[in-house]
Length: 117
Image (cartoon, rainbow, N blue to C red; front, side):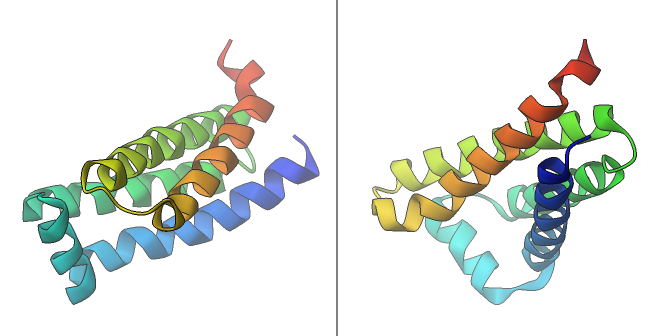
């Protein structure tokens, strides 16, 4: 386990904990998902996936396999977010956060990939 991976896992874990929790009650998120053309259940599902991702990368501090799975789940989720921004013809500026989170998730996955083999 590298120090870089642990730092990224803590940052991603805290971030995705917050991102996941706001999906459940934030009026802004409710409106955002309507704007994206997604039903309410998908907002809740996305929030749950983000909370699971957070738990995996945090637990991954002690278990590299969990870190790898958490990084993979974050990367897949962010690919979905990027496609959503493309679908609604959003600006690249609005896609920067999902792109950065995708890269950070992939870094955690790659650093810990050996534990999956």
